[in-house]
Image (cartoon, rainbow, N blue to C red; front, side, top):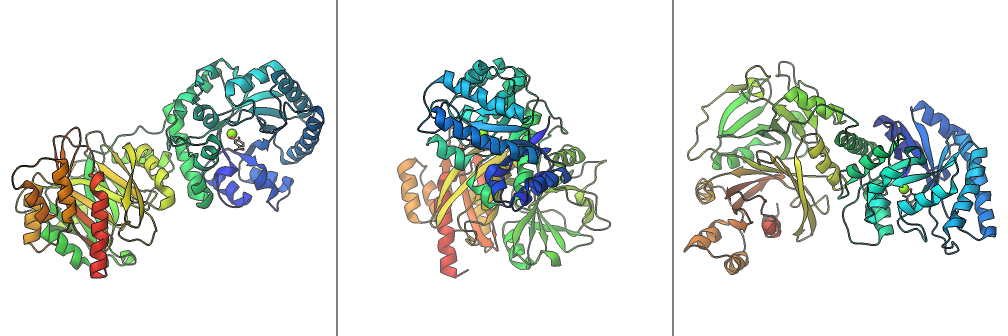
Length: 598
Ligand SMILES: O=C(O)c1ccc(O)c(O)c1
Ligand SMILES: [Mg+2]
């Protein structure tokens, strides 16, 4: 089916919006009146620009306060309509959206509404235009899709149909089942939007918090299935009023929008990109740093050994069991200090994973980073993190390990570790995009978003993971972008004995993040511990949490650049990430920075 996006969903000038929609691969646009009014282009020039960009103008909108009015006022509405229909002729747009009236002069009279909409449709038909009537969730007398359809049906006019908008339908809790009873050819237009489930005024909710399907809490796919069952075959159009998108660059927002729509189409069987195959583990985490020494010191204290070196680049492989960290000191990487720049994901079918990513408009990276490198499939996540689809030591598939020359055996004292999770900070305006990306492109399942209090702001955090926990990524978004503490990334390492791990790290000279005594007094109040247990945690700075499944013990290293490590011990199938402890951890990290001036 054809895909479309409303210009209101994107930021910038009309020209910028159209360009972004076209580049992202949309077939058409809904032109919002304000975008046209503010554009220096004539309607003919807008029409030509759209044609050049391969876009059709699928809808012009909105026309407001037309129906169920006193005759004199309706006359003025018709006069406005005549002007707008002339404008639409110049634009080459043949469908206009009319929203249900919010005018205080509108009367509660369905027969009058139908009669006047019929007269509007007469005028529209004379101009070769169709009227799509939409119930705004806050319409004065008509606020539900079924009511709007009743009025359209009783008008019985060939140039009058209905416009369905998933936000208005689902925000009011209407049952979308009834959509299946509307003749498909009387559904003139379909607008799709999701939204987080919030308890608030529906107009404010609609105008500020809509998001792309799959990014909120509505069952947009379920609604779409009803619309398809009705026989609708017009465009699938995204209409998203969102404060964040209004401020973000149009190009990436349009790509996010298109990925959302492709994923929705896949869900209802309208598109079939290569099937998802979730990753089965973390092959490596790659740190880039201008100075390897502090990173090497931290890894050494954690019991990692430097086992191999890249054959062509200044990249070292550090290993402890299945936990692998690449340390890259390449010249191109020196600008931003130490950060987590890439993640290797163990992929059942690396090439298939890359094809799926490409089909979902993820930026695919060059397969070889340098001549002679193994051809690795990689894509960029919205935050710029490079994601490599890896096959570690799996015969017949390109192996990143082959680019490395062994320098030492992978020996270590104590138990082998693996990566428990990675925490990646997202640009503030890409949080919802990131969750959708990781779900759609990688096949990870998003968990609930949680708010975490930082002393200097509020963080949002949302985990995406495989069902078996083999891959866990925590996406976070912090307050001020200049706040390095809230924006630090981390690598969490899974151990079966966090007390032993913490002790040996400390014995090797590694500083653990000190946790205030008040935290342990609170723990004593909330939980019962064995003799001496709490004292051990207090001594080492180990934090504790429990859920319905099990327990979580974790502690933190100092921070190098923008990266720190966490040691975690999950027991009994604990599913979380210690979110309850995160405010204490963040405050402690701020305190350390303040103390050292770092
Ligand atoms: O918020 C509004 O006024 C508005 C306008 C047009 C629409 O299609 C819509 O869904 C909402
Ligand atoms: Mg709408």
